Image (cartoon, rainbow, N blue to C red; front, top):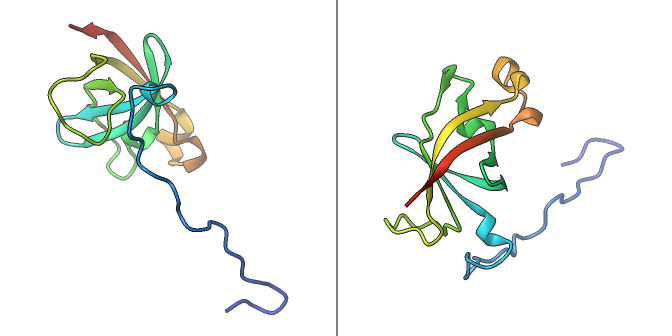
Length: 121
């Protein structure tokens, strides 16, 4: 129930998103998965030939103050863990996380850039 003078409003309506059937088409092929050995995976988006952007919480755990070992990126993934990747696989060179996220865990700074090594063939 709303307090006096306030009203209740729905911020987000029903989720009507659907699954993308062809992740090899533009713009979906520029979105992929970052993989880590024990941390699972995170979504990342290609921003240059050698970098992707992702959430900082995929790279740095503010609760334990530890870095996550994300080790490869595969574009155009669709929640599958198949060994073959249509567009290839890139290993991670290093990651950059905003200082405000590392020091204060501020969600508005939950942003990281991951630099990639040349594609594995």
